[in-house]
Image (cartoon, rainbow, N blue to C red; front, side, top):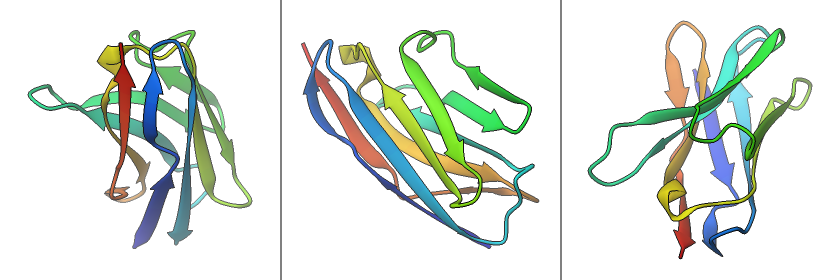
Length: 113
């Protein structure tokens, strides 16, 4: 079992920045993929960014604007979001993939135009 707690969401104007953080606890390994996905009302869930020891991946919609990083010792993952757009508005969830996917409670990000 893995528990995840996100923080750092909020309201920001278009063009601004936010930093999301996620702290994990429980049994997990450095080789497990961690990442962020988002869910906006009326839209499909979108995986925004993932990270594992060998690579990072981003959705095309956030490439060049978002940066994911991870502290393997502290079991934390961070999403730095720059040049935010109104279409980035969503609830953002941190997740980890072990024998199954675990995710946190989510944090709201709202970008005003």
